[in-house]
Image (cartoon, rainbow, N blue to C red):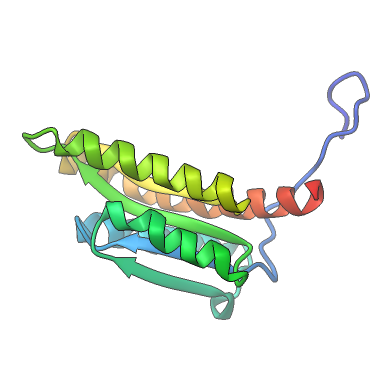
Length: 156
């Protein structure tokens, strides 16, 4: 559908049939991360991604997510990746360090490898905020991963 002066626009849909999706989930703040994962995988299934084409890797904490993503991206076994985690503010500077480094690492992996990565690492002030956001963020990451995988295939 041309929206801008009849200039052709790349179109994607959210049918994930045949797409291979890898998920890296942090185990720190596990209740929130499990909620993110549950919402994400439910949405992937709803979008026709086969469970046989999904793989889940868990890592100790958010800082370990980028390395696992990088390894998965370089493997050639995936069309899209999803990062799931929760960094909840405490009383030290550690929150900023973990949040910033994790986000930067995830973005760097995507840019360095050309792999679409949906960033579902929540950064919140408290547990209540994380719990309130986990369902929608998990599902949103599934949609983002599918859309970006399909768009990048068209752009190549």
